[in-house]
Structure formats: structure tokens, C-alpha cells
Image 1 (cartoon, one colour):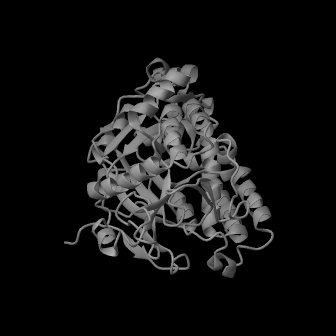
Image 2 (cartoon, one colour; image 1 turned 45 degrees about the vertical axis):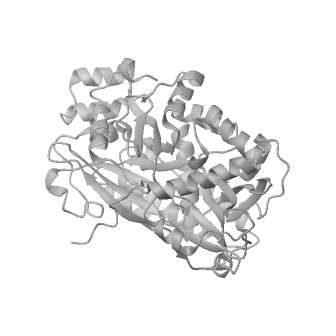
Image 3 (cartoon, one colour; image 1 turned 90 degrees about the vertical axis):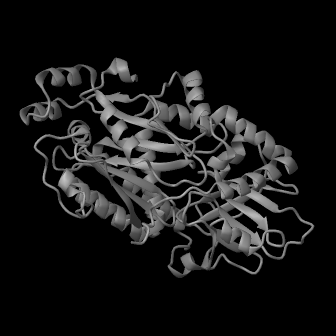
Length: 472
């Protein structure tokens, strides 16, 4: 039997190769070295959490070396005689831009580029005066924040994974017209102002979300629509989560935004799960691995990834043991007699794609630094890590409690899902709603730990948590 394409491996040799390039940057570029220290001190992140691509001297790094490291050349409009693009399909590692015409006397590393949400915000926060190449709200913009033998660059992407500020492919699709910026603002507003509260008619809510996504795609294309949807979803989640607000403020102090996002987690009812997947596929997502944690765990999850934006979704639902072998992502599932952790969360708060918003955003951090920094600067504590491996570390911030609609509580009591004592607790204290998740990846490992996810789902069941044990 052939190996699953989602049997993610670790690439320690590739990580060491890239680490040497980052060392070159710090040795040759004093501003970049100072910036990496500020990253650690002020945001709890390191350079690797933000790198979009590394530029290499093709005279000193032959194709064979890159192939051994797992990189593959990518064809397309952004591959030119002076620029070859390499990607690593089996790992969470940055792209490489190789200049075959660079001389042997030039450094191995010809530049390191980090990605941020808004270039202008980065320049302002860091008191830099540097020209930006690419128009506002364009697909690709870049600037040289700190020139030198090994320059430090900063880039901004919007629904595009290439390196051309004015890509001909988008022009041919009619997506680089003079009204592009206006269309982007209009499309974002469509998602931002869509109706999210449907008073029990969640089927109509998903119909409405799908129609909104289609309008956005007509205006700005599929990939840009995807980018905008998730910008808005992060904003909606952040507005209801104090840990998110604190960490975003730390990152914005350096003009970074949420460009270090790892994955977005949506919790969904069983009957609407196929609708959630349908809208995500409409936006260009493709299914990756799925999880089911065994006979007694009661949950499942489908991972999806968007090839162009790089956005990853972790979609949770209650799942029965016999449904592991079914196509649960595309079939309407009947309600369970008694909901498990995800189902009860949805019963109390609603679907993530509608009124509840995301259960959590997971960002990439320097694990210990991020946890310590959040507690020191904002009093935000984290729960016990649920993954603690050399290549994958994960922990939730202590949960944000949300008030629960009394009608939802009454419905859960009438259905026999919670006791009257639990109902009284939810009405008095609220129920745990959302988290920020602190994650650290190493060696390019791209996957998740199924057993660990199962454990944290059990630990965050609303029936088990009290406001004094979770924090606010």
C-alpha cells in the first residue's frame, strides 16, 4: 500500500540549512539582527515564524542539494532566467528563490523575506522610510526594510502565492482592473456585514454565507475572496477573546498582524458540517487528513488547506465510531442522542461559521517565550500543554467565558443534554467559548497529534469547566 500523502515527515537537515541562512542574515545585517531580538522580546516569536521566502545564490547552492532537502522547482510566470522558485510540498517550510546568475563571490543567502499583514503598518511601527513595490491592496508587495550584503525584506500577499506585483495570470482573469481596490473593499464588507444570527434557522444561515461567498468570488476571484473571509473571521474571533487582543497588540507593536497564523478552528453541528465543507471548497480549500480518536472519544475533524493562500482549517464535529470510514465531510449527519464536547459547544454558542465565530486561532510562536510574555504583560495564563514534543508543542490560553442565551440552555435541558444543575451554572457563569492556541513547530513538521487533540477536547468540555478553573 502506498504511503498517505498526509503522513507528514520531519526535515531536520532542511531546518539546519535554513537556520544557517538566517545566521548569515544576522551576521551581515545589523538591523535584521536587532529586529530578531525585538521579535523575541516583544512578541514571543522568532524569525522562522514569519519567513515567507529565502533568496539563494544558485552558483553556490546547486539544484541537487535543494532536491535532497525536499524542495522541488515550481514552473510558472514567476520563474524567470534570474529567479527559480522552489517549494517544499511535504513540510511547513518557506519558499526559496534561487538566482542562477549570481556570482560565486556573492553570499549563499541573498536575502530573507518575512510576511506581514500590511507593509505600511510594518514601516510605520519600525520607523522605516523605504519604497514599497506594488500597488495598495495588490496581490504582491515588497520592500527592502534593511539593505546590505544580505538584505532583509518584508512582503505582503493578498490571494496570490507568486512574486510578481502585477501578475499576468490575474490580468488575464480580469482581476487587475482599475477598480480592483474598490472591489476588494466591497467584497470584504460583504462578509463583514453578513447576517450571522439566525435564531435557530442555521440552514438559512449557511445558505446566506454561501451566497455571500459567491458574490465575493464574482468581485475579486476565488483566492482573494478566501483571503478576505479569513481576515474577517480572525477579526470576529479576536473581538471576543482577550488573549487574542493582547497577543495581537504585541505583534502590532512591530507592525506584523496575524501573518504567523497556523490554522483556524471551526466547530460545527453534525447536520451543518457538510455545508461548512461546501463553502470552504467553494473558496478553494482541498481536503487534507481527517481524524477520529477512537470508539469512545466522540469527535472527529477534517483538515483543509488552501493551496494559494496557505490558510489551513481544522473543522471539528461530534462523530460516532462507525462513521470513521464514511465520507463525513460531504454527507449530512443525523444528530446524536447526546452531544459530545463539540456538539454541546455548538448547542450553547452556535456554529462557528455563524454566530459563535472560531473556537480558536493557532499561531506559530516560540512556545515558552509566548506563554511567559502573555502572562507577564497581560495576565493571560495558558493551560497545560497538550502536545509537548521536540517538533510540536501546543497549549491553549485559558478559555474566554461567554454568556449563553437562556433559550439555548433551555433547549439543551429539554433535550436531556445537560442537567438542571449544569444549566444553572451556564446561566450564572457562562460557558467556555474560545481560546488562542500557542503552537511551536520544528523540523518543518506540518501535521497534528490525534491523541493530543482528543485529550484537549475532553479537557475543554463545557460540562467540566468552571469559570474559576479556566479564567477569563
